[in-house]
Image (cartoon, rainbow, N blue to C red):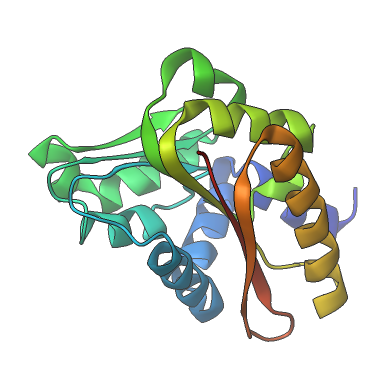
Length: 204
């Protein structure tokens, strides 16, 4: 396995010493921080909302959510023990208050254990979903009526391009539509070397 493959795999499921390094990079990289804050702003959060982030990583976006969601609930899931640990440390004050939680879990546990959310979102996780259409059916099922899903993707290939971001957005668009989402919209954040695109949709 090449060095690049090893690094890419760490961002898919961080583990071991390199996993801790990957988490540090996610938390500190300026484009990551900007992408997280931008995505949370698109959610139009209210204090009472119930929020779920899929693949929460080191917890940057969850932390941003807790600034607004004060009487509702903020939950993050990740299937990396390393990321869950980093997110729990970052969100320790909020977790102690009782309305914030970070769990070790994966997408297929959503409809079995978690439901009734006003917002469900993810950042640079969609490319790891084994079945895009099934994933959005699960996301749709765990949303409350009038809830919103937001999926942000920024290509991180060797030579990332806007075309790659748009290509993924089209796939997300189709999967969301087939899952029953309406009012599906694309939002673009100009970043270098390639933009981030967030696709939002609502459950009515």
